[in-house]
Length: 90
Image: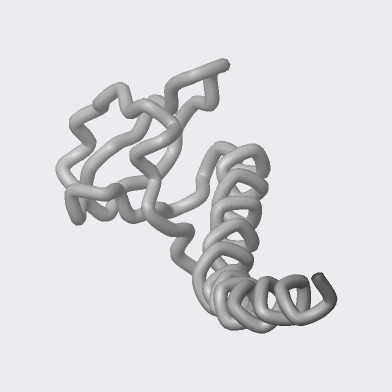
């Protein structure tokens, strides 16, 4: 009986180690990045310059609940869903 339980533990140990490596190298950094992106989106305000997922560089003119009203370099205004903000420009 003791030999079988030792075999079971030794066969599961590599799987546990693999899961731990997978968690710390892939899952955890991705969660941190998603949390930082969500915080950045909630802190957006009028006048901020952003880059959208489509690559447009625009300026925020109004912040709404789920949308942003943004203007392009030629002063055309567009409505943008908040989830499509890629990053904030300095």
